[in-house]
Amino acid sequence: MSKKTIYKLIHPIEVASKKITKVEMRRVKVADLGASRDGKDDHEQTKIMLTRIAELSPEEVDELDAVDWQNLSDEVMAFLEPPQAEKA
Image (tube, rainbow, N blue to C red):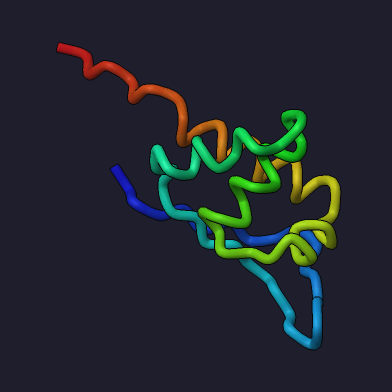
């Protein structure tokens, strides 16, 4: 099981003269789940989660293209799925 996932942005962003072409995410920890509960809805909870596990600022997350946002949201949810059982 990989501890990090790297997602290459389809639409790179630039915030404060910093160009971002990929997002590296670590696996979700219990503390991240607790912090994300501060969000008022799924969108806000995912945004909080990305700022924690991908070390993106809220401003950087806001600049993401909708396609990249959806793909990154899917990646976050994949971290929360149980591993597939091994076949005998």
